[in-house]
Length: 242
Image (cartoon, rainbow, N blue to C red; front, side):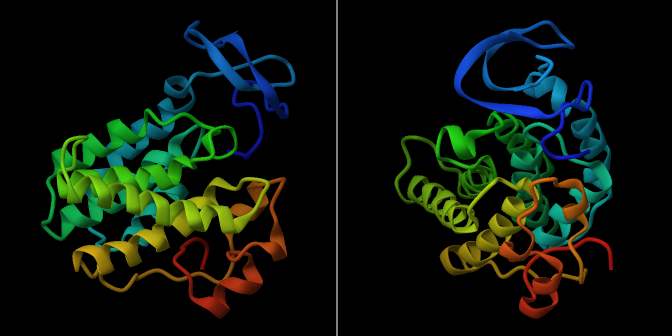
């Protein structure tokens, strides 16, 4: 589970300027992508996230936390992350917290997981729209029952995504999916309180050190708001090794 490494052979991933047609090394599906390993391996979203998704399916019924930040960090730590999994972790974190507060159903949680799992990896750089932020929009869409034809709820789903994107944009690069998830979770907690009046309980887990930095060869370190020397000072929304 090292960011920027091939899930097939562990080699470094290449982020190309233009897409190419490749074949999934596991299922054989052919599709276009800009991200392949230096040895030409590639996994489609479904194959890349298969193990993580299976673990999350098992974990969801066990989680009774009511704060999205706690849930998101718990899922990342206990289930891992790969491919585009951070995108649906955000949607699940919010919807599961809302389910535990009786605002949505378990079916809604799985609907959010399904929708957000369709957001490809690499969207932050290639499409200008981080999938973690879109995952927040997915959660708000389900919470407010938005469709392309609704009025206020459609606007709110897009506003939520926009708030998440602002945070991701402020973080700079190179990408860190864990940092993006943490920032979007924090932004979403604030947005949902202000827009919908839902005040999530205070998070229960606190850390003093970012566990993900050792798994991120491109870690921004002091430039990151979640770096170890910053976390205990600003009390931001994250959890990990205590």
